[in-house]
Length: 174
Image (cartoon, rainbow, N blue to C red; front, side, top):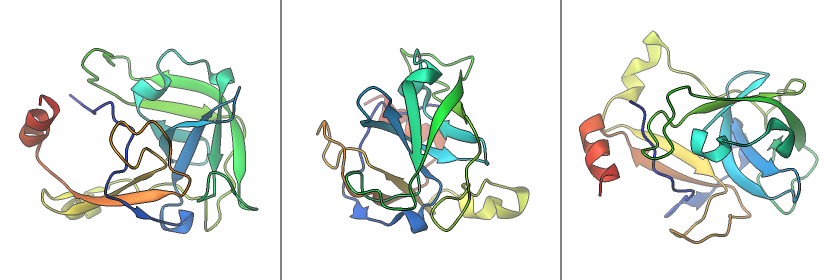
């Protein structure tokens, strides 16, 4: 099963520009405009996110912003979209966070450029890069300290090691 911790943090990270992670999405409350979760562009109509971010949320209550690094000064590359539909994994369990994955369909299509691109999905040819022990990059505007409660203004990233499922299960059960 797929598991995720209910943590919205990029701790011990470093500032990064959107051109280095052009698939990064800011999911926002339409009512107050505040960022509350991240996602990844998977093609010109869909965003992948965590189910715990959007479970019970109406598509009409969120917007998806892409193409920027600074929350308080998004600049000219900002693209903002309404959500058309949210699909939470049918096996998602909000008690255990098993199958913590959802897809959001946007109204319209992303306009791809150097700041807005789909994430590179794994293929049989690129499996080697997913080997346990290799590093992957995590990015977002999450808290920069655990339980900080305040989203970062500057897009952040951190490089972490790929670990096996048993080790992940042990860490998640702590």
